[in-house]
Length: 364
Image (cartoon, rainbow, N blue to C red; front, side, top):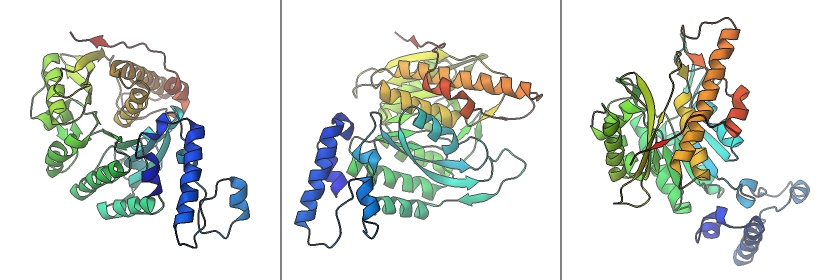
């Protein structure tokens, strides 16, 4: 396939744009001359596209031909028409940080399930694979990142594993960022059978893992009751596969903090840190999805400095949550009475250029 051959030797984002465009054109011209096909080559300009409407070929995807300096993300998560959870919480922040993002909605609901009622549709594993095959048929499967969030069925989660394998045949350097959304505060959100699939199959192929405290305990079988336990849980997850682990929220003795861990080489001790997070007296929806998106966005900008990425992500999130609480109060609503929809659009400056107020403390 053209996309595979174009990017096989090294990641596309290392090429100067001019070199990439030249190689893209040359490869297509060579492909044209070597095929006994009546199909036209890809259109290389918008003007040519306009003048060749009868052609069966689409113009090149500019996120491939003229890639950003950040990356191209395939985000497979839930979607709500109203409110910000899943892809609605993750796609916009990543775009603000410069990423091209292609969302696949695992569900499409009218609103999140915390409302009295909701309506919508659920995508199954076969339907997900149909979408992947459609992308593959048009040579659109080159991604630098895969991001996954809430998944509600074993068939869908097993198909995710097939997607990871397929994307890595196109780009072996693919970064898979997995938010293993399974539950919180001792409550399981998913069927029990998914826990073993995450533990045995998903964790080993993930590049970055972003569980909360309860999810880290489920994945490791290890109870986290101290900072030392959190660090040990990170080590156990490193042994299973991912080089980057961020336990996004750990609550111990009334304190809330994040623990991050980056293992640069297998077998070496990881660099670990914590960030103390102030508690805001309210309950929000979509914050875990947003946090994972921010960690993806900033960690790719600071690939060898996970603590810097986490500082930026936490600072963005805390500014957004404070704005959310303040706006609900301005509207005359007590933010402690119900779960709150986050003020994502109104906080875009805090996402693009956060003021770093929460610093990482490196463990020795």
